Image (cartoon, rainbow, N blue to C red; front, side):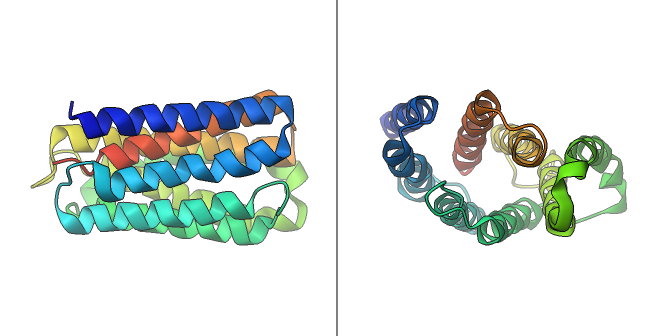
Length: 217
């Protein structure tokens, strides 16, 4: 593993660990600083530190990370702009979807790969449904896009120009992102829990890091 990748992973781990510790301690200023900082480090890693594969793929991943950073800021407890934050993350998933579709156009044979993601996303919606209220439509639309994003990651397997390592990293990252978002929806609208929040954020940063690493040649 290249030294720049090692430094990248160590930086993400340290910043993310400090952010999670701040969350557990209810240190709001510390959390407000280190939550977006961790995502910013992942963004820098994808943009500059990791030796890239094809440039269009990296550009879409970096765009998704930049939109995720905006979403992180908008969803901070001190800001709490839920609709704007949700929109930023929805656009981030559209960017990831675009990256995954570059080398693997949509085909009917890929449809069976969609089933597990739809089932998981549907279970999350059902679990949170009673507490969604007026936000049912935007949350449902958001999870539909996340499921589609994970599906497109799964469809990259064996596509021309896609290395097995990039495929596995992207699929793992997309799948963990779906799990993290499902926890977020249930936690925010049905079962508030600091433990769930900690798990959600941990999975979120692992997912983003895996997506960043998938740009490697």
